[in-house]
Length: 88
Image 1: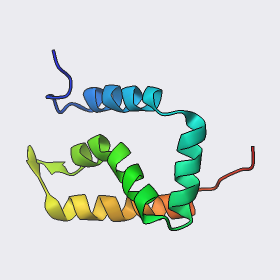
Image 2 (image 1 turned 60 degrees about the vertical axis):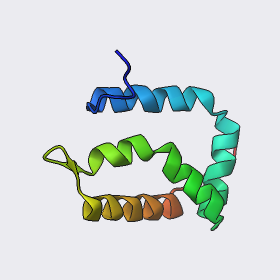
Image 3 (image 1 turned 90 degrees about the vertical axis):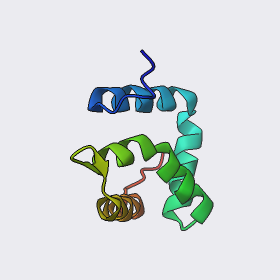
């Protein structure tokens, strides 16, 4: 079964886990730092990276709720801006 077509939370986790394997953690950290420092391109890459979870969370009664989607994206951006980054 192609998990890209299903909408279950477990399948979203599988897609996200696959995405994490593709990303080097150092580059993810740099992307996070850049997004946190106001780099719009880095911020959009972060949103794209987490898009499967955002899309799944914005579904209501098996329909995409655009208002809920916007709220989730705004909350995600706020979380990134407040995320603590420790020095390695």
